Image (cartoon, rainbow, N blue to C red; front, top):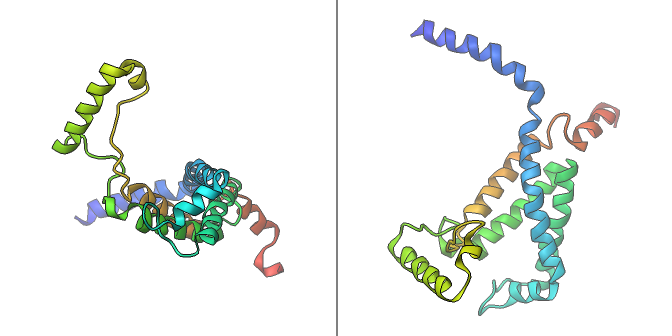
Length: 197
């Protein structure tokens, strides 16, 4: 067993330290994945701010949040500005925190009652029946082939899956930062080291 462990660590130590110069690629990939997510969400809220405020505040069909105007503006601009900062790799650790708060609020206020899955399980009997009936209606009254040529119909479950995933990605960025060689944070830290500040 010792020989196997020794061989494992010899291989491990020969291979993985060489990858350290590329360790900025993972934070870069996460940042670039999140940029369009937050940019589109922020822009949609900003473009229809009155509707966003109403949705945030309405207790009957909306979220029923306190101070809906303040929270709507905070959420919208946190997402939009956050997307730009993630794209540049600037203040990545700082912007990760309010974006994580936004995702936590979304998970609890919007998605929690719907469970985990973002898309309903089409194998579940009730979901399969509804999908089947929707397809029958579309075949009879619509251009089903055109409607489905880019993908299958699904029933949106709207669970916490995406909000939780984005939260975890942001948590990772909180600890890693924007990434070596691929973020403005990296170059600013080299330009202005703490010892000179």
